[in-house]
Amino acid sequence: MQGLKWGVVALLAAGFAAPAWCETTVLTNLTLIDGTGAAAQPNSAIVMTNGKITYAGPAAAMKAPKDATVQDLSGKFVIPGIIDSHVHIGLMHDVTQDEKYFTPENVSADLKQYAAYGVTAVQVLGTDKDFVLDLRNQQRKSRPTMSRVFSAGQGAVIKGGYGGLVGVTQPIATPEEARKLVDEQAAKGVDFIKLWVDDERKTIPVKMPPAVSAAIIDEAHKKHLRAVAHVFYLDDAKELIREGVDGFGHMVRDQPVDKELLDMMKAKGVWMVSGTLSREMAYSLAMMPWLNDPFFTRGVTPGTLDALRSMAREKAVVLGPTRFPGLPYEKKVFWDMDRTLFQALENWQAMVNAGVNVGMGTDSGPNGRFPGFNAHEEMQMQVLAGRTPMEAIKSATSDNARWLGDKSIGSVQAGKWADLVVLEKNPLDDIRNTQTISAVFIAGNSVPTIWQTCRDRPLSACTTGSPSEPPHMPY
Image (cartoon, rainbow, N blue to C red):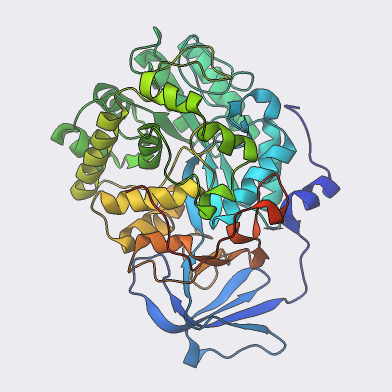
């Protein structure tokens, strides 16, 4: 499976649209929130031709091309497609994580689900099989109808330590092995290099030593790749910055960040790529309060819902530690997670206030974090931590595109891909209104929204809901 190549038929089935000859769609009478941080623009129009934006501005100044399809979006709001800068795809069946589920079909299902939630691009951090890179390459030659992929291939995990996906990532032990791994990933054409520096709250006796992490980062830079680190401890974050790391995939959570770290991040241009605040929140909840919310339930399998509603999960939350399927060790997943959540929120606020570059990422995919759904939670958590709705949208769109180094996505501007989310309600009034999804476009292709989706069961089996329903949130 690792070397699986996608044939033309498989690619088309997995979500690629054949190019159309001069296909033009006009969206008009909308309020445009373009993702750059500029003020919302009422009475706007967007012209999409062959998947690209050819006009975005006042409707009065727009001249509709001849034979264009026109959609009147009166009363609606348009934002750029959301970008999630930290996900893992194809890992799960219900609540069980295992390499055997990493198939083209499961990957495709996850990417379509991200798209249904308006997440039109994802950065997968270190748990991909090689066929995902083939898929990514095909996307970049075409007009995809599911979420775009940026991939770190197989990330760097220390032998006996934390991280990765058993059966996919190959653990290393020495600086020499670390450099070899980076060289192999670079030869495959990965977009980034991922490394894990953690001991899971001191429950694992091995943590990646500086000699190995420094070799990874140095070799990545030699290959003109940026390195993103999973981190938990403040001291590790400082050491990684001294080694030249480019970004962090998680917030520091063991203690408050200090001025030294903030100054180091700003001086070196180190990104907080993904705060994963929604991850910390999910792990602090004994019973998830969205289990009857159609915005959530339509995007998860029946087996997932059964497991999340079970007494066994509640017991694991309250008592811990527990052994999750697919993990070779027990972990106190929920123990002390309230404190961790509050520390993450406090540190996020400190980084934003200090002017550190921040993106939006969720760590969705593994158990307890849900593709697409968590992106909306993550933006809400950012606002809870002190950002404005406009800033949260910008971090999830143009800022994330800037981190990715992709100038073709992230904002609604002429010349960029028409990756768009149409909303029934104004997200600047209430960030939770990003849930009121009316339509999603990827490269100008209209794709099914979450309100037209029912994961792994007939559409009629899902609880009814609509994009104009008030969102139901846990706080």
